[in-house]
Amino acid sequence: SYELTQPPSVSVSPGQTASITCSGDKLGDKYACWYQQKPGQSPVLVIYQDTKRPSGIPERFSGSASGNAATLTISETQAMDEADYYCQAWDSSIAGVFGTGTKVTVL
Amino acid sequence: QVQLVQSGADVKKPGASVKVSCKVSGYTLSDLSMHWVRQAPGKGLEWMGGFDPEDGETLYAQKFQGRVTMTEDTSTDTAYMELNNLRSEDTAVYYCAADDYGDYAFDYWGPGTLVTVSS
Image 1 (tube, each protein chain N blue to C red):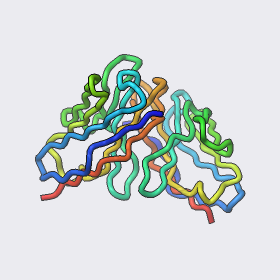
Image 2 (image 1 turned 60 degrees about the horizontal axis):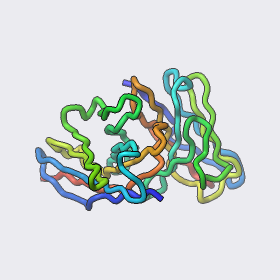
Image 3 (image 1 turned 60 degrees about the vertical axis):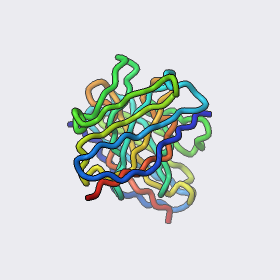
Image 4 (image 1 turned 45 degrees about the horizontal axis):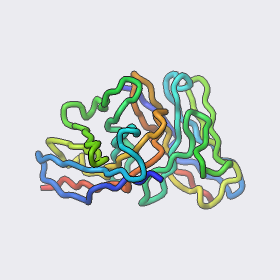
């Protein structure tokens, strides 16, 4: 079965840049999206189709994808960005697989 | 604005079935691709299945095939997810999640329904 692997945790200082990589076989050939989930809340879409940002999502969230990886970058990280982040990919062969999740801590 | 309202928490015994509902407001269910995602306590997100607009069919994750059924009542704009033969490992929060552009991104999420399986 298809798997998407993320680092379990990422730490970042306020105002610095955090990057989360999602790895999967030929992931760059599929559309990836990213969700933010804070404790006790439902997930929120922050990036779709690799690089697009839904309305209302701050510009400091950006995405990229190439080869076997997709990356979520949070620029000028704020305390409110502390959350779990999940990548997800979709194509006809794998349907809707989620990544393992990354806990972002803002120190 | 799309809102998804889910049914309340439920407790089931092993071997039983559970049916979770998700009512859409602010949009028409037939214009959405509805999916179901679950999250066990302290664990990650797990896609269970959903509508694929490209081929017009509901797809189920292999793990749940034969045990899950997802249906829709367009007259009431309500989606349902029924999971059979419950076991303790099915204890989780179950979310409905909607894709409004057919781009396989879940733009809207329900608040989640906690299903507890316990004898």
